[in-house]
Length: 158
Image (cartoon, rainbow, N blue to C red; front, side, top):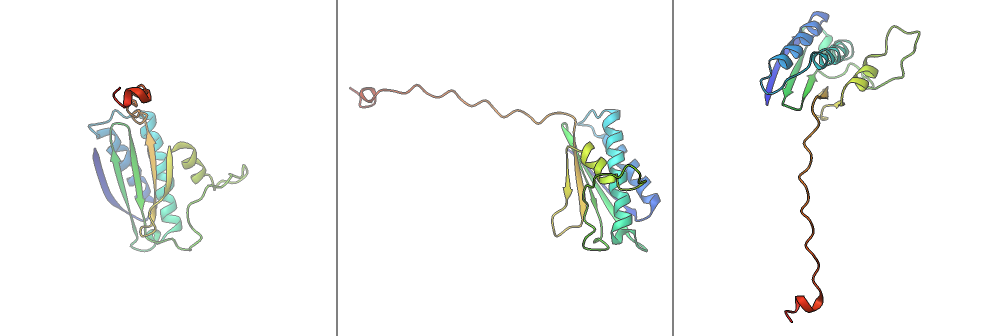
């Protein structure tokens, strides 16, 4: 498993840097053969989440920063965007049905559609994560066949 992490300025250029950072982390991970499509998907989701960090959290304030952590294994990746606290308590990420006439409001809708899973970090930490899978999880080991039932006479040793 590979883990990469870095901090970025809470400005639009930080979003672009984070996008390239995540794409690079996936491309160089020695234990995974990540397709170009999955790298592009991870970069897009990262852009959306980091842009939200700049817009909706104190990470986008003067001298604000956000941190990105990417964990890659042979089956997939988990990426976290850790931020300062939200500007308002109601600024938690949520999926909205996009208004076809609006130029905004599609970010979390895209994240929800493109990620295998996403959510907010634990209550003690501010931020969000997403998971991408390129290989299915390993199948559970087969269960052993049940032993044949013995009759009561056989169990008593008669």
